[in-house]
Image 1: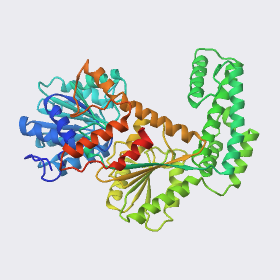
Image 2: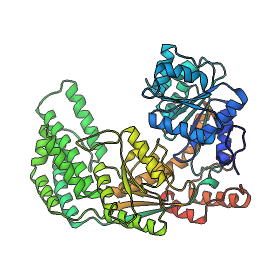
Image 3: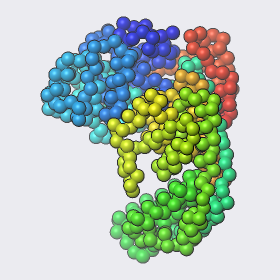
Image 4: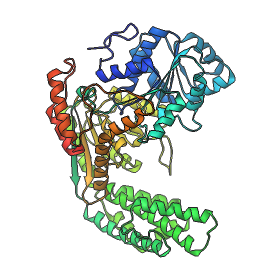
Length: 556
């Protein structure tokens, strides 16, 4: 069943319960919508825009943080809505005098917030005839960001509606309320993939953890590096830091560094403090090197040491590279020809996917650019596989980033099938409109529950999908995997508590059906799914029982 509305193109928007429920709230009061990546924030915005223009008339202003996002939202709104024109405002494309004319001629304007803030300050136009103002990535509406200034001006418009959208609102009530206050928000609508009005529309996602064994060379190199790390920890302890911490973690080292720099900054400058500062810096470098050896591979480790040598600036850099154990580790890595076993697993998994379905789309997520380059190079050797790297804008140590325009073009080529594998760093997790895929591969687990959900949300949108998570045995991969799983379980268990806490301060929409608060989410979800299959919407196929594999592997 599709949405029927005079301003929505027929057959373009599936009529989903949760999107209808949320859009209903948004049409009545200014609302912050919190949805994971892939659940249709732009679709909800299109429904609200159509309703507001039909009922109230006026003008709609749609803001997004970057030029590529503005362009993507404008393109999708043109696909969804029956409108003559949608104006696109960016500093590069539209000069000020042209924007004044376009503002008068168009019912919908999509823009970056900085352009609108500047135009308001210059008096080129006002917001008095704007009946709906949309803020994409609304969690940015803090501090001095342009959203705050535009929203402040819009609060002067009587009866104006604001719609904020985000996948990453944070978990603290006060932070969410700060965003709501800055944007003039009066209601919050929160959904996850496990809410009862969402459940029927989420397709099967088969999540598999694939464990690989570290190579003998990796074990030997790690042993040498761990000796250096332990030396630095003992040196820090002798300087009065890390007391009572038997096995310091990365966070402990970072906290020690913050304390050292605070004390140096306050004038406590003596030999012991400088010794501690050097030990902490070397410890962080060795800790990072161990992670690369354990979870990424020899090429990433060698590249890291090469960059450190080229950029050698500090005493810590020199001592790190000249440490005998680091020298031994580097020599071992230089003689090692085999790459991390994860590389072969990625190649095998991707090849198997394309053997199943030659028209597949695949995303491989890697944390490091060196690894993404390696994966692209290796995948390109497989018949029928056309990989492309997708990284952020920054260029570091000769590793060239992608400009915003290049990012958009890469995604368009991926959609068109010119490339069928996207090898992404974190830039592919949220924001840009990357199409649904058949397979998502995590080269390594990540400890963040939100980022894990965002990555996983790149599949299972319009059809069943698979997620493969590669985990190296007895390494921090395992710790990150279980950390993310625990955090996600806790997030779902505490969702209703967050809703209750917010409800004391602001209107919070309630998902239709049974609220997800069970301590055993897999049992509750099976029960809810049985109800959906018996009584739920007939136009949408519910999840299949095989979804239980996701719940057992990930949530349970």
